[in-house]
Amino acid sequence: MTDPIAAAPSTRVCVVPGGPVEGSVRPPGSKSLTNRALVCAAFASGTSRLSGTLVSEDTEVMIESLAKIGVAIKKVDGGQALVIEGIGGVISEDARRISAQSPVEMFIANSGTTIRFLTAALSAFGGRYRLSGIPRMSERPIGDLVDAIKPILDGEIVAESPGGCPPVSIDSRGWKGSGLAVSGGVSSQYLSGLMMAAPIASQAVRMEIVGEMVSMPYVRMTAGLMQTFGGQTQWEQDDDGKLSAVTVGGEYVGCEWAIEPDASAASYFWAAAAISGGRVLVQGLGEDASQGDVGFARVLAQMGCDYTATDAGIEIAAETAGSEPAALSPPSLRGIDVQMGEISDTVQTLSVVALFADGPTRIRGVGHNRFKETDRIGNLAIELRKLGGRVDEHDDGLTVYPLTAERIASDETVVLETYNDHRMAMSFALLGLRIAGIEILNPACTRKTYPEFWADLESLTGRAHHWHSSDRPSESIA
Image (cartoon, rainbow, N blue to C red; front, side):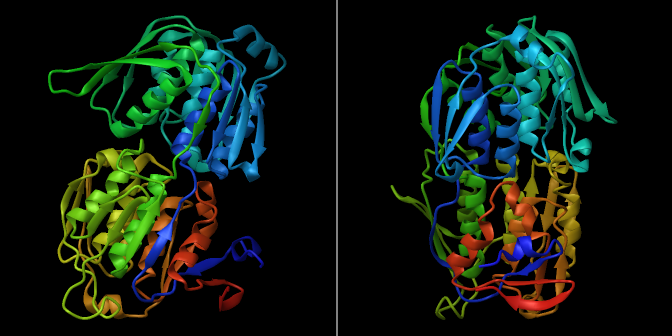
C-alpha cells in the first residue's frame, strides 16, 4: 500500500466518525525512556541491550548524535531492540581528539529530550560540539540549563539564539566542580539531563533546585532508570515536602532493560474510548509504570469513565447517558478542575475530551507548555476555537468549554493546523471520532514520536481514514 503521508507533503487526514471505539492496543516504546536509556548506555562501561525501544525521529537523532562520538549502536528487529557498546565514563582527552579539527555538528531536529540531555552529557564528557535543529528549536529555551552548567564547566558553553535558545556551542574539558543550581520551572528535562551527566563526570554532584520543579514524575523516572545502570541519587526535600536538591554519583555499567510502552501515546486511545462511548485496553502499562502519564487514565475516571487496571494493562470504558445502546447514546463526561503539571504532555488530549463534557474543564499548572514543540496553550486555543467553542487562556493553563450538540452533529469542514507538533495532530485526530469534516494538516509530524499512530488508530476503530491534498480530492485509503 502506498503511504498516503509520504506521497504528498501537503496531505491532510480526516478521521471518519462512527460508533464506540472498542478493543485493545499496545503503543510503541516510550520516547522518554528510550532516549534516557540511550544516554546511560552510551556512557556506560560494557554492552547494553535495550528491548521495546521506540523507532521515531526523536530517537533517531539521538542515535545519530551518539554515533558521532564513537558509540556503536546495533539495531535489531527494525530498531525495536538496540545493542549499545558503551564508551565508559568521562574520557575528556579522547573526546577532544574527536573534535580536534572542528566542533562535532549534531542536528537534533525538534527533539527537546535529545538537545537537553546531550547538552548536559557532552559538557561532562568533554570536547567541542554544536547542537542545532529546525527553526522552532531556536525558539525553545535552554538558557536555564546552560546557566546551570557554566559554573561547573571547565570550558565554555553558549546558547546562540536570543532568549537563551539553541543552537548550543560547547567547548569542554569536563566538569570541575561538585555543586550547581538549576531552575525547575520551565522543564524537568534540565534536571534530568544534569542528573544523567553526573556519572559521566565521575564525581558526585549536588544539584540545588531553584523554584518548584515541574513534571516531577519524569525526574523520578530518570532516577529509577539511572539506578538500573548503576547511577546513584540522594534526595533532599524542603519543609513542604518538595524536592529541593539531589546529589548524584555512581558509574554507568551496561545492562539489559525492557522499555515500557509510551504512556503519553496511550492517552489518545484511552481518550478515544471516553469520547466515543467505547472501551479501550492499553496493553503493557500498569499502575506501577515508571511514566507519570499513566495518571491520565485516572483523570478520565474523574470525568466519569470506568477505570480498570489488570495484569494485561489499563482499560478505560465510557459511561453513556440514557438507556439507549452505546452506539446511539453519547458518553456522559463531567467537566473537572484539575492540576496537570505532572502530566503536562496529556493536556492537549484532555482539552479535546473536554469539548464533549457537560461543563467547562479548568486545566491548571501547565504554564510551561508554551515552551514545547509549539505554544501548547495559545496555539491549542486558536485551533479549538475554530470549532466554534470557547477556550479561555490563563497564565497557568486554560479552560475548555463544551461544544453544543448542534456543533458536534454538524459536518462543516474545519481545517486544523498542527504547528509541526505531533501531540497536536494525535489529539485532533480524536475530534474525528465524533465530528465529521475535521481535516488535520501535516499528519506526518506524528513521526516525531509515533510513526504508526494513524495505522494503529485505524486498526482500533476499524474504519479507514480519508486522506487528501490540495491537488487531489478526498479519498479513502484502505
